[in-house]
Every structure is written in structure tokens, then in C-alpha cells.
Image (cartoon, rainbow, N blue to C red; front, side, top):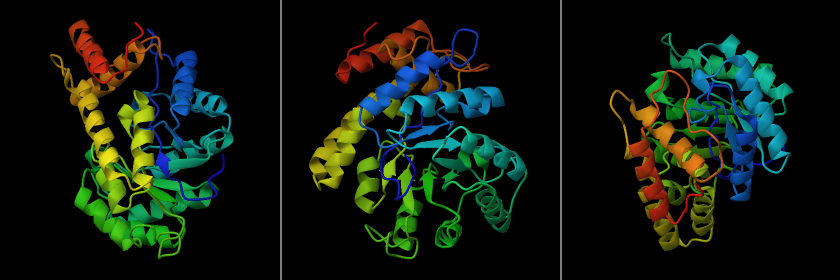
Length: 319
């Protein structure tokens, strides 16, 4: 589904199911895509942080994207993460993504080496020049160690380099300032940055972001309960902010699954990814809840706590 209009709505970052040997489980991935599309989502973001893209080989990346594109079958647009440290490597991933049928690509600023905002701008412009697909910037300073400024995003939006932004900076005040800079609520199609989408990655404050004028959300826990985020988004579109807040508060409770760990010697990221995958396994969507090596796996006790959270949210585990 080509992006002929600004992307709006719920665009989950698709988890990457792995088998016991650490290879991509394409059958489980196809079921997950059906689970998400069946929940009413408006797009799919493959090969993002929740997809464990940093752990995947180039061959595994291709397998994931090929599977997601094939299973989505044009029903919703597929955004492909082309995340890597330098412009040439990102461009290589982008060419592969285009060849596999992605509808848009998503890139961070360069990382590992320190870069100036002028160099970051050159990075995004070169990618867009090399690949004829809409390009979304992914603002993820916790991993990239540089924050995309409002002025830089506005500049790259106005000159057509960027089609949108996935904001995972955690800076909600900065996100609000950006929305105002880009024309405010409902003004971006005619304002200074036409056809530009602002998507929040802060999945626990989506109602507030939508009220401020964000166009949608990229929620990790949307893998587990995509329909709830769709209900939240639709309530916001209808101006029913009470119902939107109720859905958001339920999702805040469900998000508590990430707190069942971390188990001993387990990182926060490993715990969150493990809880998402553990929930999907309990729901019968994927066959194995393992995260990529060298992440520590959730314990049986933690998985049992995930199951209790699913029951409390009205999502009855199938296993």
C-alpha cells in the first residue's frame, strides 16, 4: 500500500519471533502479522528496536521483511527499519528494503561516531537521494546518543527529505513543541511541512500526544493488544477523550508485564522484549518466546506473572 498520504494511526513495531536455535520463525511471524492486521492496525514497522534489529544478521533482516511484506499483502503499508551506524550501510539496507517491497524506510541518525547536526542532515538527505521511498526519521537518543532537534526536523520536513518522524526520545515537551512548529493540530497538510507524519513511540501517553496533534503511535505492546490501541486512536479521532483515556489507562496496566523482570542479570530491554514475546506465546500467536542471544530469557516465574497480567487485561491466554 504505497504511502500517498500522511501516515496516521497505529503502526506497531513488529516483534521478530525466533525458534530455539535463534533463527527467524517465519510461520510465527506470519501469524503475528495476521494478529496485528486483524486488530485493525494502520501500518506495520518491521525491523525496529522491538524487532531486535540490532541482533539480526543481514540475511535475517531480509527474511523478516520479506515475510512481513508477503503476509501483509498490501492490506497496510510496511515501514522497514534500515538502521545502521553509517550512511553507506543504511543506504545498502534501504536498497534491499526497496527490492523486497517496503512502502517506506525508517532510519536513525548516524551513531558510534559523534556527528554534528549538519552531518545528520547530510546523512538523511543522502539516504533520500539514493532511495525513492518515503523516509521516516527515528529519534532514539538512548541508543543513538544524539537528539534530533526541532529545527532539524522542520528543515528536513520542509525540503521533502523526511515524510515523518517516529519520536522515541521520551521528551514529550519537545514533541509538543515540534507539533506546534510544524503547524499544530491538523495544520501540517497545508502548513510549513506538508504531508508530514508525527508518530509517538511513548505508548503510555498516546492519548495526550494525539490531543496535542500527533498523527499516531508506534507501540511495542501493541504487538500484544493491537485492537486496544486502535480503539484508543478511534476514540481520539471522534473527540471522545474520556474513552481514549480509559483505553490508555487499561494499556498502562497491561504494560506492567515489562516489570515482571528483570530477572537476575537481566537488562530492562531484555525484560521488555521478553515480556512481549512471552505474552504472544501465551496467547498462541508465536511458538517460542525467546529473545536473541546474548539476552537473558524470562524465568518461568516471570512468565507466570505475564499470564496473570494478560488475564487481568481480559486477554485470556490460550496456553
